[in-house]
Image: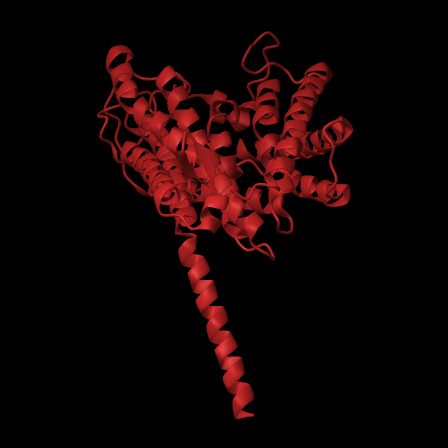
Length: 398
């Protein structure tokens, strides 16, 4: 009996040591997730800063969070390149990619490129603001370069955590992969913010940009993750990340520093309440579970079906939820309804109205059946790419 207990204790000790070693060996994955988180917090914070305070200096805390994340991702990628090139074991060399004689995991190479793009955009963005003033829209040339860099860092983090998930048994590492996937999804929604106001969710522009931006993320994660209900989990984490920013940012006081000031702002302006993506994500997961593991590039019909599921559930959910968001019932700390307006926004009843009344408006045309079919076409294309990409990701081990 004593011998049996001793053996059991020894086995448990070995299992604990192996688990601890596995956790330590994955510190680059956790570090890359931290870098992506810092970038995400920084970009949402920076948008709120522009809406609440205005452009006052390059050295804002939001900017520092963004560039800290880029520098951290680049440093981790660079360290992995040095380690795998000069100090790797045979197993590590087999789990790396050779580029011009240097070796590193594929995710590290992508993150290094993204970090370089992000850090290059910093002086470019500062010069742009000094030359042209405030950004009228989120997308400007320096922000485009910054956005590409952030996209690369998030994909690099995805690939780094993905490789570990695929090398381990029983879905080990899938939780971190899901978390990084949620950051990847949130980045996409941030860059379509100006088309996702509740006021625009009865119009064409909102669903057009959602069709371009969201299925490629949800379907890819649903296809690649080795865990149950992956797309739903990703969407749930995305909603929690966005909600935390909605709830935390208004706790800090803020005062506009640039004129003209049309709307009184006394605290940081929160981001929009997140899209209810858990609903279409659940439908995507149901379809992918029934689809099975086999997928061929020519099975475009599956992309068409999953796109129809995504678009129909998104439309049904947001159509009615947007009506609630424009009602007085949403004007509280939880939903932050009617609290997302910058100091430079002219107040008025239009804040509580839908903006789809102009049939010739480019940015929010009326959602006609023909335009809804266009959204389905866009979502089908992105879903097909996502199924291909997700199928490829299931094989990545480097």
